[in-house]
Length: 291
Ligand code: G1P
Image (cartoon, rainbow, N blue to C red):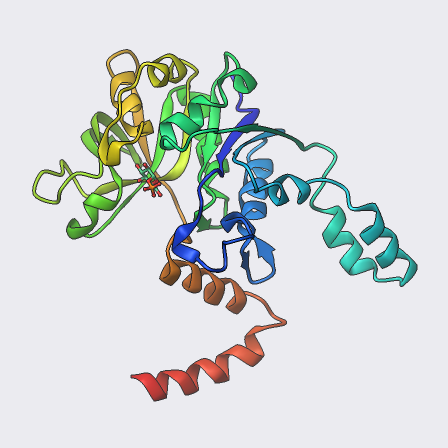
């Protein structure tokens, strides 16, 4: 089976970025000139996904509007012959993309957010993308995973090693064995204390899940932080099916935190020929000043 649908949990309040996120959804914050959510949707498309399911909340309608046509803006740009800008706007609504949206009425955690998408996903394997985790690689990370899924046909989650002191910020995999970058899990724990963590391999916000996860999420009790955790339901899925950690190629920026968000802006701006010439001399100057 192929992955056709991707669930994007976007109901969070984004309090780490206040006051910027008072009236603007966190996922609309731009990395260089594109909102975080668009990176996630483009990654889904590159991986062959055609339906994106936003699990949204009230007052975040801008996320849906971003993937709708904007006739007045388009006409304005067309009449002024600003065709490059017009193309950027049209690129947000590619023909092969359909965007559905549902609401997480109560913020009860990531597992609950994914469960809210159950009717829109139906009985097929699907992807989950957490837009906060921005990953840059030669091949987009979800595409790396869907390619692997075509032969493996099992649930998997992107993993990367984190410092031992940071295990309490992530889901952590308990590895049984590893071959060619695929880590067979024998357990999964959400945000374990460093002293209790089974490894330093952290779950990153890209998942491919079999639909059996929905029943487990439906009956899942609250875990770390008093929330319904996707990690806990995946740990129970392990009793029935194999679940793998997928070591991806690429660099991950944690755009859920200020430092990671700034690093992403810096790195992606430096990738750009139109921005690098202005940035490099400035950065050198700043390095001399601060180091
Ligand atoms: C969520 C997941 C966690 C995962 C992390 C990746 O945590 O619950 O297992 O490691 O995303 O970004 P959150 O960052 O929402 O606290």
